[in-house]
Structure formats: structure tokens, C-alpha cells
Amino acid sequence: MILVKLYGTGGCTMTAAGAPGSALNWMRRSRHGFGLIRITRVGRPAHQRTTHSATHRFLCTKTTIGFRQQMDHTIPPKEFKWTPGNLINENFKLGDHGHVCVVLNRQIQVPAHVVKLLWKNAAVRCAVDGGSNHWRDFVVAQAMSKKANGSAPTTPLEPLDVITGDFDSITEETVDFFKTTPKVHTPDQDATDFTKAMAVLQPVMAQRKIQDVVVFHDTSGRLDQVMANLNTLYKSQKDNCNVFLLSGDSVTWLLRPGKHTIKVPVDLVTSQRWCSLMPVGSSAHNVTTTGLKWNLYHAQLEFGGMVSTSNTYATEFVQVETDANLIWSMGAYEFEDKVRQAAKT
Image: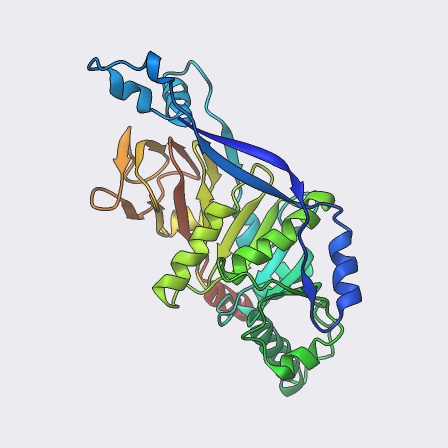
């Protein structure tokens, strides 16, 4: 059996670049340290071990046993409710306390009007290392577009709250462009800049009761970078932290063990947009769905076996019950087509 023991919080020292005083003051608002986790393996004492044929039963983890009890309905499964329409319709806001926007070091493919609305409604705005270069390009492009079209001046985009990373990708021009923005140096090379940014943000999110993070994510990039971003979804999973990867035409997030209800926007149902369930990292041995065109019933999902891709919807409400982590991804609206259609009417 694997037991995880949590020890008290430890200090986390980070060096500020560019504006050390403002960066450290921004960090101190959280008043939290980072916990240390130690994993120990425990087993039955040697004098209690047996060699009968049922010995393998003792190898079941506590989580597996607990979920078997859930599937047998002796323990109700943990329930989750998701409303992705808040990301892909006129609301563009998550949670009662707002959301966090994160710009990764990839070209921003999400349509501009979606980015601007999500950015405007965010409670915290963060760029990750070279992501600040892409955000600077976006800000400049928006200003030039308004000027070229002769449009009336609009309210400037809200400023960045913090830039994090090991700063091996940010350019001198970008450092100067965001010279008043706090910068938190995270030099650890054993984690990606995205993962380290989540570690920086989580104490602030806890203090301000923010639960949702929207990440501008590029699915057309290198496969290893895409997988690294998915890995951060796993590392960031907590009851009070939901991370959504948003690309030009899709929304992706992690479904943890339990029962999930996803309210699908009606437009996606009528247009039969795609959705998928992917068992990344390990097998899911018991997955049941309702509301999909091709449902699963106590199915096992694993690479090398069956995975659920190119599925679509039968109803507005989809339910997924799973005994293991799954990646849920869904096609979003055709953003640019929606804008063009709206302009014609």
C-alpha cells in the first residue's frame, strides 16, 4: 500500500528579476509557503505475510479499493460539475472570484476577441517566460489594428500582474516593455516553466479563493511540449484548482476519479462537434458514460487498447464516471466564423 504523508510547509525562496521589491511584495500577499511531500511505502509485517493464492489482493492500493466500493455503490462517487460554455460563449468568466489567465511560450492561437474578454474578466494575469514575448506581440498587434481600421480608441488591455520563469526565453525588448511588471525567477530545471508558474500562483489563488486557471495553449506545437502541458494538469490537480487548456478551437481539462456532469453548449450538440476521453499516463479500468453518441459501459481505456476519440454528443448533458484520471477534450465554437456571421447581421 502506498501512503502519502504531508509535512509542514517549508520556505520557498525566489529571486526577483527587474523589480524585486514589487515581485516579493506580490508573493507575500499569499502568506503561504510550499508544502513538502514525502512518500513512504509500508507493508504488512513479515510475520503476518502469507503465501496463499489470495496474496495478490494485498497489493491493491487504497485508492483502488475505495473506488471499487464506489462502483459497488457502498460509497457514493465524488461528483464534479462542469460548464465549459462559460469559456466559449458571451460570459468568458469562471468562478465567483474570477479566474487566472496564463500565457505560455507559444503563439497565441485563440481568436483575439476571446483572449481579450477572458483577459478582461481575469482576477490574476500571468505570462510564463517567453510567453511574455507573445503577449507583447498581441498587445502591439491589437493597438496597430485599431489604428489601421480608424476605430475609436478603446480601453487598453489590463496589465500583466506577474511574469515567471527561468528567463532563458524572454527578450531584452520584452523586459523593457514590461519593466514595471513584477518578475519571479524560478530557476529549477527539474520542472517546466508552466509547472513552476502554477506553484507561484497557487498560494495567491488560495488566499483570493480563485479556483480556475485558463491557459492559452498551442496544440499545433511539438508533441513533447503538448505532453508536458498535460503533465502539468496532473501535477496541479486539487479540489480547489481547475486548469483549462484553451487552443484555437478546443478546450481541454482533467477529469479525476469520480462522476462528472458536463453541460455542453447547445451549438456544439447540434453541430456535432468532436469530443474525446484519453487515459494519459495509466489505464482507466472502469469508465461509463451517458449523453455521448457512442457511450462506454464499464469500459477499460488504455493506450494499446481502446481510447475514445472523435466522439460527439447525443444530448446537452454528458456524464462520465471513471476510476482513474482522464483527459477530456472538446471542440469549441468556430470562433472566427461566429465573428464573421455576427458582423453580417
